[in-house]
Image (cartoon, rainbow, N blue to C red; front, side):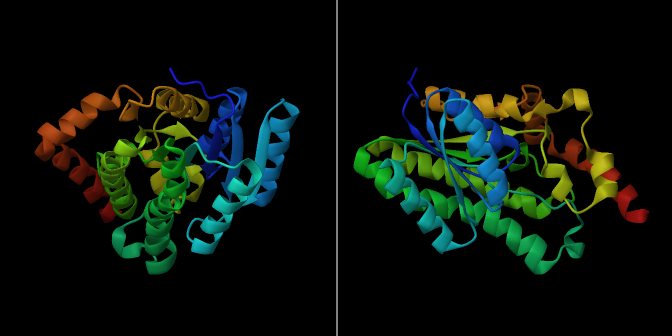
Length: 269
């Protein structure tokens, strides 16, 4: 099991949810954490909290859809601590709407830019430095939507399927040079994700019961575990999604039927 003490961990989407929870846990492991997101005030508050707990944290505002922001973030991290050991590609959001109702720019392009293109560009920016030091780990936060595509999440699922393919390809590309690449595929969780889907009516109907939803800390612990055990290729959470993935893969017509019944009722309302 790899020791994390002194590692430099760069986290996107660190202002809330999985990113903020992971920042706290990595800091408790002795890591130096770089907090990145668009909401600078939240980042500063979290950095102060981590420092007050004895950790080391740096807050840097960054929009992963802007190449200049990505380059500035990587440069600031290297200027501060000289290396990047872990990139946690966590920034992302989803829109819960019919495809024909999605706004071309705000809903479609923005999801692709943040969820997929942003993760790719972040990885591209840190890889030369990881190759130069002969080590590194890139964690890509995907979703079970990267395995099971649900109605009303068409573009979101497309970005997460794409991120899964990118993760697998990059894992094979980077492994010979000492860089690990792994994917995290969480299901329902208590985060701010549901506040930004853009459809309150559908959100309430599709929301998982509280007792089936994970905490952000539960998923963050999985991220830390993956870095400690870098030979693991991926983790799917929670455990009960494994039989659902099997059902989706081996009985797709059955899944199509039940999901089709749901979407037909919604469209007729």
